[in-house]
Length: 246
Ligand code: C5P
Image (tube, rainbow, N blue to C red; front, top):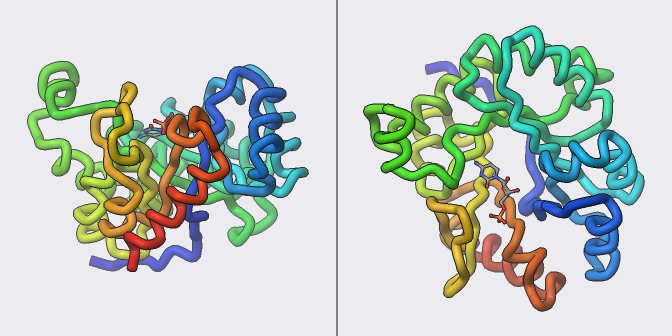
């Protein structure tokens, strides 16, 4: 198998800014001494605030992962990605289940919206959401494979379509790296510290385990945004993740 080395990389930890509006998101960062940290903006914030939230975060020096999980016909995704690339975001994503042609189109759109390949945003493909478990895969989606097999298959498809990496759970990081090569990026949400509630997440793991399994980056939302001291928790989680990598 020919593995193309990706020149792209990710930050270690992205804090999910799942807030209602821009004011709440920016106040959270400012009040908790989190200036300039890598952040993830999802649908909730982006659909309310539009491109200006990206502009404001970039102006304050935050690397931005714009998590909109595009999934549509290839031409639509290509044009949408061209627009997203022109916002200057660092990372974007699609649903891998949109297929190889759609992923290729996403990559082309990103390239067209960027000055050059170096400045093109990292393209990730979401395999199975971390809120999906085996029961849902089998009984709701009627996919006759294990979560691991399905994620490995979607990761191969994503790599073939030109994605730089995938979003998966910590449980699948190793198999993705085996199938797609160690340079193929993995980013994992569903991170929880010990004794914490899982909320709506099903495939969860600790920051330490994430590091040990070799994931390139983690996304952490409520564990930090709803913590008593977000700054301390951010530092703890980052340290735990990096210690796990050793
Ligand atoms: O609060 P919590 O840490 O569960 O937040 C995880 C974040 O990662 C959310 O913003 C969610 O939309 C996102 N995400 C996810 N699972 C994926 C992809 C993104 O939980 N597969």
